[in-house]
Image (cartoon, rainbow, N blue to C red; front, side, top):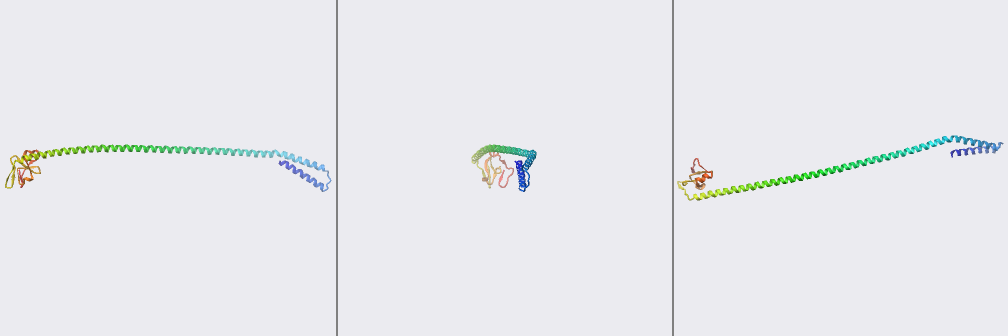
Length: 232
């Protein structure tokens, strides 16, 4: 289109020049100037035709360069899209792994807490069982102690009753008084609180009056010496 416009401009320029010469009175044949204009037009057309491959080549190169650039841009865009998709996929995998790791950690903590609770329950049951056994043993021990104490008390009561019986039996064995001293009858003694027995005392009410055999059986011993209140 450019070359046609250029040829048209040259043609009309030549015609204007011819008309100018005609108006100025130049006496030359019109056909001659027309022939010259045609020759000039053909010349310009030839030049344009020769120059056209170069222009076309430049245009083709520009078009090719544009296509290559567009293709390269599309390729870059595709690569960028793939790279972004790969990054997004990697991030998704990392997030999934992180979530699974957190879930696994939470599950392990729950199992650990459950195990601790189970151990605590077993410990409390063991402690309760130990306390129960200890309480049972203590109760048995207390029961045994009470039974033993009752038995000892019964024995003591029996011994006291026996002593009282012997004392009551020997009450009839009267003792004699002489000058402020009280003398036990034959085979009888006065037993003091210190588990010593005498034959003569000043205050018979402070002693137990029993047979000498009963005193020996109760663990009393004869006094080694006398004093101002009692004599062996």
